[in-house]
Length: 345
Image 1: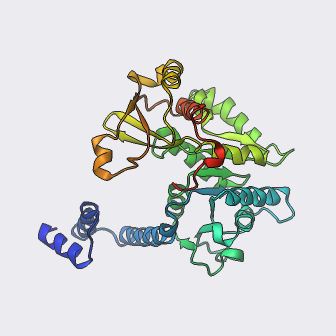
Image 2: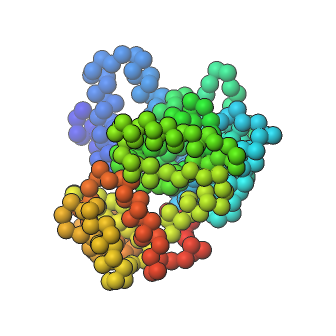
Image 3: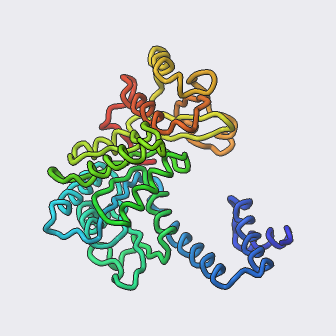
């Protein structure tokens, strides 16, 4: 596609930011025409792009608010103790400044929406031939978007949130839970807390963990430390603390070449940094964990320049062990009190 034509189209659209990325999107759309792509392939591309664009617009006003996505069965009845558990969890997180994201359906999704309330809820529903659209508190709301494809729906349910709670459910809940863990394990998603929540007396997630330990870990298909990526509990207090506490001091990370930059809310003292290096030396491919000023790539993007940061050459195969480092950073004496945890991203 002619570079001048791309420039003109972007000018006509009034695009002043991210013109390189927008230009690539236009060139790829043009490429589909020159590839003589199959009609079904074109329809998948069209619908996916349209759905993502609409979802981005729904979520954009709440970009600076931390969100938690709640997964669980659409078949859970209002009389089930799980329903009350999900509702109370969502209420507690909303009271602490979080927004709650669900699949905007019945069951656990409806319970979480009720708990958070319509002003603190967002929904990403799926169009199915045997289910109606969103009902209840999100019916007709501008805080819900409908998707045709599960993969675009899961993208939005996972991309936008800073924490995840999975309650018992069927194939869909298992699919979402394993995808969450895969993204975390492989580094394709930034670290976030994942809580697998039962009610007292229920053994759904304990049974699931036995399968993971006995079949996946024993066979060597996942690392024993990969089970550090999630918390299994039946206690709402533990679940809320796991979600909020993850962000007490740890704020975000970013790669700059082969260096991992960890942004914090409060800088560790010299003694704390020395202790971190002693405890987590094996996470570094070379060298240790060091303080740093914002690196050039961060300065160029004006990326969280106000925050203290650490840098290390991290072994990317150690995702489970990295959770221990995040936990240690959150428990430092220099870390801000949990009550001061910001709800903004």
